[in-house]
Image (cartoon, rainbow, N blue to C red; front, top):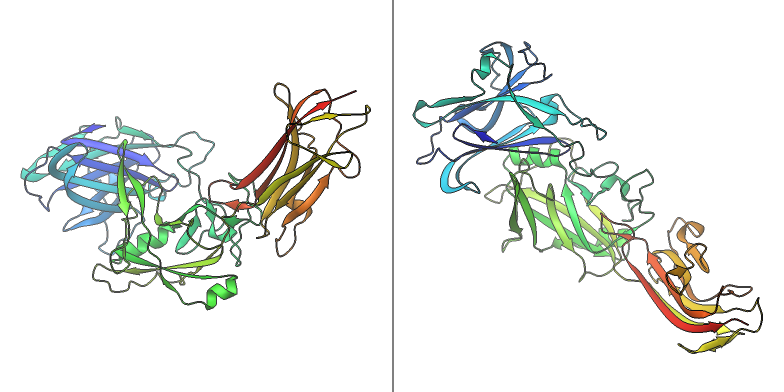
Length: 475
């Protein structure tokens, strides 16, 4: 929206309201005395309630620190103690933006929803509303207000309507440094690297390994503390073994990969690339900035990695490569992930009639109304991560047998503490008996097997299938 001297940009997620004050009219030389006052009517009642409604501003002489004070009445507030610390964060800047290539004054504010009195957001709605007024003070003593007389009158404030479901939160308990792998909270990942989510959720992996490209998402509270204490870089250590115990005993080394993420600037997504320098340091992103993958610390491309157990630890450093300690009470974290990128081995070995194999595309002449065929197949996962096996037939125009299947089996029938189910190297179904086709037609028989693997956003991910066609003639 248009504001005095520029544009206001807004976006929210489940924890913050992000505000950009892009003052494209304020060019030239940056003035450290530029300031803003952001007023919030906490209960949206259109009047100034003493010791409830708030004013936020940049601290004089501390451009990247946000101050919060309570209003005591029109044109008056409590001020703030020099020792004040609040969850909301501020970043000041002076440079080009999407709205102007000429360098100009900018402020980016990450309002914690708890500071605005609307935490948490109820996904069922209605959408929370932030009623606000703004005062801008810039070079040359220019001061502008929107609406007029904001500090003295809340009867005609501006409004920002927040999204109720801005993003899917991670499941379960998040980790202290690496909070989640995609949408899977670290608390739902067992010590052997397999994850299970039993509650109603976007995905419900069951004793699942990981596969594909994995997003290691940081704990925003930890990252905010580290960044405030000077962390500007980090390194990612990695070790590997056939089991969790073997991985823990293996030597660790720095893992070096690169990825892309989009910073959300107003209504635009700005592409940015990330990767390590020659010493293995990744640049740390200001956690108050909004990205399409929020708080992404490391994107692990696993296609060239061996299956097994992989462990990760992230260490933080300041701009001069000195270590920055984790917050009090936050212990160093090794994240353990079981990796399985392999599809199951699937083969429709034979279509059998009378116990004899039928060649692909051949014609089968049944001998009675109860005569039929059997299917011999392989559906095998050496890693033991099989989820389901099914046999179906398709014929005619859209006819098929998904329910009931000719045969199906699932991990639920084979679950065990080692969560190991390999499936079948050879099996013949139906046994006993045969599958009796309903009509004379050309039939496609297909076997499909799926593994228990997740990329943190979908489950299951990996499957394989094989098929054979024959023509069946009923008597």
